[in-house]
Image (tube, rainbow, N blue to C red; front, side):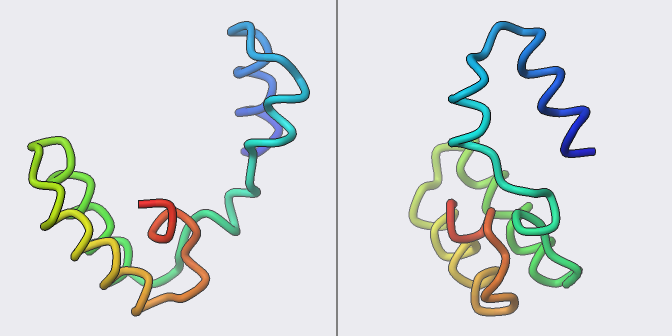
Length: 75
């Protein structure tokens, strides 16, 4: 999956150095915890709706549930 995404980003015109610098393996960015994933998803929904404080709370909760969940920390 990581290779496919990298190839797609390259075909869309993104520089190879940018892809290398900004990419994280899918296994690092995601979680096996369904509860953490749910909290992160609710954070994404809140963020899109402009509810930034609520989004931050969901992201923090997701990171507490799985401290290795990279996307939660990015949120």
